[in-house]
Length: 345
Image (cartoon, rainbow, N blue to C red; front, side):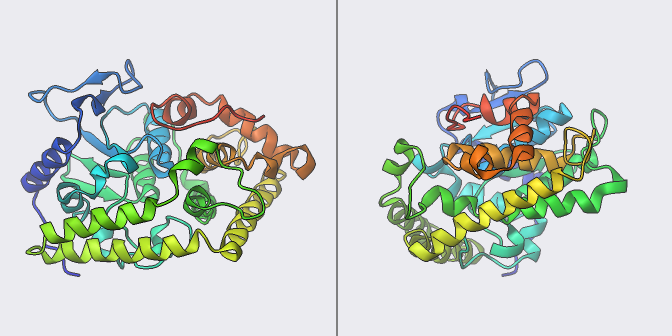
């Protein structure tokens, strides 16, 4: 797929159009050091902030980016879609914007499903969150890993989350977390014991069919825009594969086992450090993504991976420290719509 590049003015226009999708207006807010949670509704006449983030409260990938922004003490325009209730992120205005990212122009479009969300393994999904717009440079950055790296490299004034002397080791940990099948474990259940919250279990039946209907309706709307048609069709193929995956007992058992194997690896990694974090005294991007991942696994009822019976005391203590990190509190635990349950420490 060849995507025509937009200039800075056109990207600004696309950004405004994507913000206009959000209803009610209270979900388009401004985040700052004084107002770290979405409390201040933005005015239509206010100047655009340097950064715009399109995200969901519940999205684990969005939670990673919000935690990085909080840790770096960087303000931004918070544009929070309604998520799986209204599928505002499926609207053409948002997809057009997301297709302007570098990764959209270089990666293959998603078409299959393995339970994860990493671009490297799944391909580029043009309909998901988060997406970051840097208004200073007219850049669109998509994929949570790329956004987190971009922020860490460009906003080091408050804290260096990506120290150059250990950058490859940090990225290795980020990639490990990206291999966790969080998406599969959200939409599907371990067939031997569904540990997900009851309210989540109740929402899942028929959810993929709803996605199909919304995507097909948008394909009809944009039939004269080949790039968008290709994007929607790729997403449709992915979601059809996902619908089959999450009811496959063998696939879901494998996903659960894969997640626990990664936690076992974290226990081993923590045994190598003398400090509270993965790289000793330094809190890095590795701790951001692992902290978010553990909070999500706990929400899904998988704290047994590091419970007393599992014999992983280092992960258990690390999780407890993560729950008290202010940036994780702001970006995940206290953020409206995060869907958290009380941690089972």
